[in-house]
Length: 80
Image 1 (cartoon, rainbow, N blue to C red):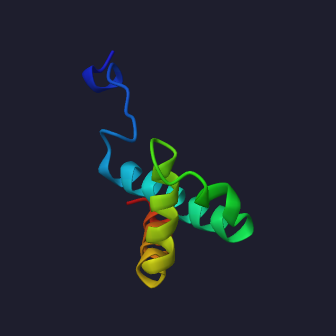
Image 2 (cartoon, one colour; image 1 turned 45 degrees about the vertical axis):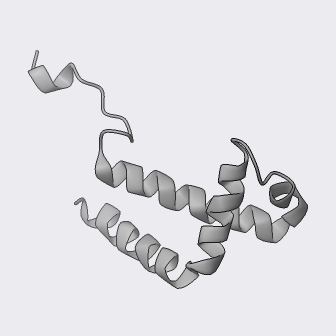
């Protein structure tokens, strides 16, 4: 059995996967805030406040987030 098959990869230890999870979280929170603003806006503090902050990042930096999504999509399709 190979040594690297003993270790499990997660999004926390793989930088590309971590970026993918963050981008998907930002895009999802921004979409949910656009569809149902009361759902995200009422939770501005605590752990659920992270979803509000991700939605704000998606709204304010939308050109950069969309560019990052396009780049990540191309990277996933090419296998890098």
